[in-house]
Length: 442
Ligand SMILES: Cc1cc2nc3c(=O)[nH]c(=O)nc-3n(C[C@H](O)[C@H](O)[C@H](O)COP(=O)(O)OP(=O)(O)OC[C@H]3O[C@@H](n4cnc5c(N)ncnc54)[C@H](O)[C@@H]3O)c2cc1C
Image (cartoon, rainbow, N blue to C red; front, side, top):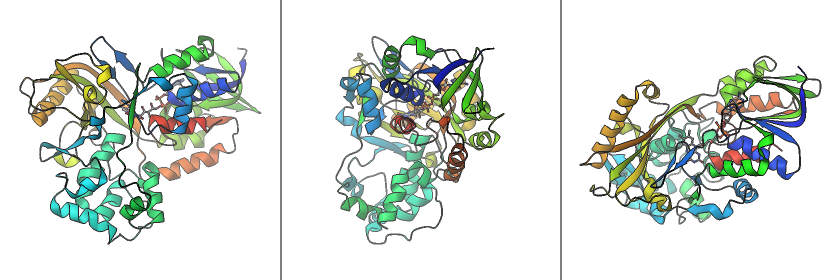
C-alpha cells in the first residue's frame, strides 16, 4: 500500500484535535484529521428541540481561557457566548437529606448552613492557625482537612471533586488536579490570607457560559472552516510507528506518512495505538484510569414546591446516594428552553466510587435516579425521563502519583520530536484547559 504523504496528521476529533486543526489552518499548514466515529465532538454532544436544549457530555464553559477565547474568535463564535443567568451563582449540596445552599461569596462562609458552627469556626481559624505544609503529595481531601477541618473536606471538597472529576477526593491529587491551590500554599501558609492579599475573597464564582447553538456548535463551525476534505470521519487509527524522521500511521482504511502526528485520542486508545513501537509510552498511558459517568436528562413540573433556581446540587459521599448531583439547566441557561410547564435537569451518576452502576439495565438506572431525585426534592408528581447516556470511560482521574506518570510520558516523548500528545488527561480536564494544552502543542 502506498502511504499518503501529509505534513501534519491529527488523530481524534474531540476538542483537543479540533483546536490543533484550527490552529494549523490559521498558520496555513497542511493536515488531515482522522476521527474513528461518524462525528466530530468526542465527549461534546448537543441536541436542540423546539422546547429544550440538551448536552450529553460537558454542560458549560467555565473560566474561559485565553486559548479558548482565541479558538472561539477563529470560529466566529465569540458573539455566540451567553453568560449563565446570575441565579446560577447559587449552588447547593445535600446535607442530611436536604438541599443546602453553599456560599456564593466567600464571606458567606461565616453564616452558611453547609457547615456546623464548629465547622465554620474551624474553617475561618485557618487565617490564624495556618497548618504546617505537608511534605510530598497530598489528596484533595487531606489538603482541605488540614487547612479547614474534616467537615469542610466532607461537605465541600468531596462533592467539589465528584462534581468535576466524578472522582474520589481521597484519591485525587491536589497538585495534579488543582495546581493553583498547591501554588497558593507555597506563597502563604494560610490560603485565606493568600486570597485576601490577592483581593480574591470578594470575587464571585468563575463565570459560566453556553453557546447560542450549544457546545457542539464549536465543531460545526470548525468543520465549515476546515473543510470536509481535510476531515476523515469513520477512520480509526490502529498503529503509529516511527520510520527515520517520518511517522507512519496505519488506519482501518489507509496508511499515512507524516512529519508530525498530534495524537489526541483518550489515553487508553493512545496506549493501544503506540503499543508496538513505543511500548514504554504505551505502558505509562495505560496507567491513566478513567471513571465512568451516566448522564440523564429529565424534566419536572414547575408546580413542584422546590424552586430549582440555581446552578444545581452536588451530593457528598457521606450522604450515600446513587447519584453524584444534578444541574438545573433551564435555570442556568433559560434562553435555551421554551417550555413554561417544566424545569429541565441533568443528573450525573456513577463515578469512581460507584463504577458498577453503568452496567445496570436502563430501567434499573431510571428507577434509581428517579427515586433519588423525587426523594431529595420532595417531588409530588415525579420525574419524566428524556435521555440516558453512558460514558464508560468518561473522565481521567488525576490520582496520587499522576504527576509522575505525566513526567515519564514527557521524558519519553522528548526523544520523538514528531509525536505530540494532546487531550484532557494532560493539562486539566475542562474544555478550556484541554484547548490551552492543545494550542501549546504547536
Ligand atoms: C459527563 C461529562 C461532563 C463534563 N462536563 C464538563 C463541563 O461542564 N465543562 C467542561 O469544561 N468540561 C466538562 N467535561 C470534560 C470535557 O468534556 C472533556 O475533558 C473534553 O471534552 C475532552 O476532550 P478531548 O479532545 O481530550 O477528548 P474526547 O472528547 O474524548 O475526543 C477524543 C476523540 O478521539 C476519537 N478517537 C478515539 N479513538 C480513535 C482512533 N483510534 N482513531 C481516531 N480517532 C479516535 C474519539 O472518537 C473522540 O472523538 C465533562 C466530561 C464528561 C464526560
